[in-house]
Each structure stands twice: as C-alpha cells, then as structure tokens.
Length: 188
Image 1 (cartoon, helix red, strand yellow):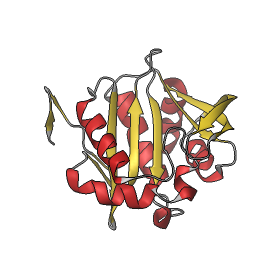
Image 2 (spheres, helix red, strand yellow; image 1 turned 180 degrees about the horizontal axis):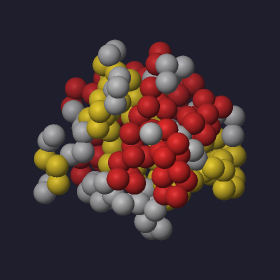
Image 3 (cartoon, rainbow, N blue to C red; image 1 turned 45 degrees about the vertical axis):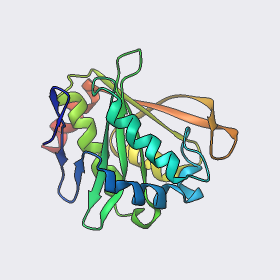
Image 4 (tube, helix red, strand yellow; image 1 turned 180 degrees about the vertical axis):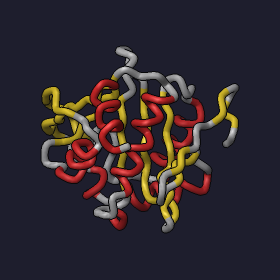
C-alpha cells in the first residue's frame, strides 16, 4: 500500500482484480477508454471528447483530494488498466459510488466484482450505515451491477450528462448496512 498524506492508500483485491492507486502512466488508458462516447455518455461530469488535458486535470484532482472526501481506484484486471471506481463522501456522510469500465471489458463481471469490494470497504472499514449510487435509466449494464450488489431503487431525477449536453433520468439507489449484512449471512 502506498501512503497518501497520513493515510495508507486502501488497495483492494478480489479474485480477478486489483483496485489500486492511480499512477501517472494511467493517463494514456484513461484517455483512450473514456474518449469512447459509449462510455462517456453514461457519466454525469465527463466531457466528450475527452482530452489529455482532461485526464491530467483528473489525475491532479484525485492526488489533491483528501481520502476522507473521495477515494478513487484503478480497476486492474489481467488485461491491465480496465476502468475506474471511486467513492465520494457528500454532505450527508454516506459514501456514493461511481465507476466506469473501458468498453473492451464490458460483460466480464469486472464491475460487479469491483463494486462488491468497494461496498465491503465502505461497510467494513469506513463503518458506513448506507452506501448510495446511481445510473442513467438506459444504462442496463450499470443498473444490473448495482442490483447484483443489493442496491435498491429510491427514486429518480433529471441529471445533466456533460458528454451529451442534455439532461437524462438518473436512477438513484442505496444499500443499507442491514440489507448488506443480511445478504452476506445468506452467502456465507
């Protein structure tokens, strides 16, 4: 684990993935995968087209953001850099998970696996009582990832997609500690 400020970076491992800290040489795959409109159109704040300057801004931003406000991981599979998953802690104090995966890695179960690891981190390490997330209503893949991990729909709202330059319906979901513990009791 690498040290970030006074806190060690929480590297997470799953059966097939390593969720690790960003490095400068991640700039090229970030730009390559997120420059695909099929990826960027499903995200709220990511511009399209995505430039090297956007990627450099992102790497600086995550380096400068304290871990108690946000933690972002590279999803590394056997193929190397495959995507990104992170949590930010909004004013309500409940971690909110966001993620994206490069299109070549869709349909392999990577995001479900990475999301499970981050959810477990939120409950086990951070002591959260609830974790939230969301996905655009037409993003079946992402909604399936969230459902597989036990998230329940709590509502929807219009949300701007920067890449599209328009509002899209965002489905908001949450997973409570109680439900997470019940799901773990069944699978153990």
